[in-house]
Length: 183
Image (cartoon, rainbow, N blue to C red; front, side):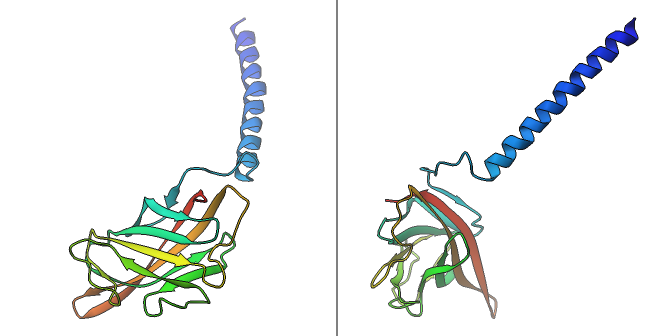
């Protein structure tokens, strides 16, 4: 008699267990395809290792103007080289080069080194560890991101910088993704 009860219980668990697994797999697949995604209204940052975005000072306006405040968490003084923005397909949208802040791929832009005690003047773009620096890229004749009727943006940001270790200068690129609502 115990064998029959155990067999019935096992058949019940197998039938409904597989059904639950199938429903979960379909739900995860639909979620990954973006069916439930209605856009995000939260500002988030992922992927940045040494150069940390300050979310309260980061955003993109509907006219395509990009502004961001970053913190140097690299552990030493850095020299900024370039900041590049890419769309979701990996296409370069715009950049602000420290060596050519007024024109980079037809975009006006530039760096603004934050007001911490170790920040040096414009043109050198040195930022000491723990200090903040700002990046602003404006449209000029075109736009950085472009106008959008969507509620949210998603942009990949590359911050290229150099550090000096002994007599050697090393170039690094810190990459991350910013998502949020247009301002």
